[in-house]
Length: 158
Image 1 (cartoon, rainbow, N blue to C red):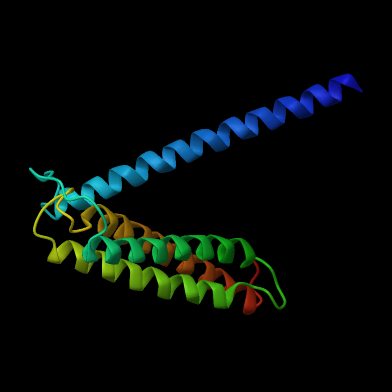
Image 2 (cartoon, helix red, strand yellow; image 1 turned 30 degrees about the vertical axis):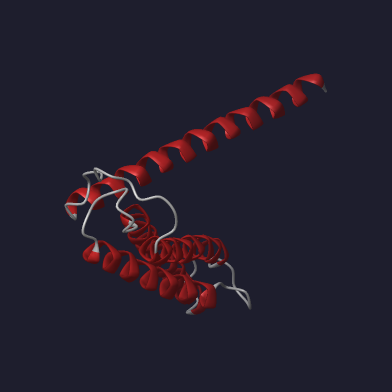
């Protein structure tokens, strides 16, 4: 009895450790991708004077970022749900994730294209780069979920 509880606790701790390490790796990968987008857009140099507060472009970038984050969450849920048959196969959620990701990626890219300086200038370049990266991730998740839902709908299985 005691051995079973110890084994269960050990497996639970291993699972938690793996999830924490995966989350840290995902955060590092995301930060690296955002930095790569800023370098590619030639906007990685910080501003000599920092602008504080919410500017219109920062608000635009933040809105696109929130939309992209919502698209990633909806896309992940749709991907999880897409393996099911019957009514809730995640098809509509996959389409919503695709559209949200597309809108967020386009707005993030436009924000970066219109920016005249790097981080700290009030142009919202960090939020724009993050929205671009998360928008692409949301589109990928939505596309995968839509393909899986279609394959299940045609009766081919997983």
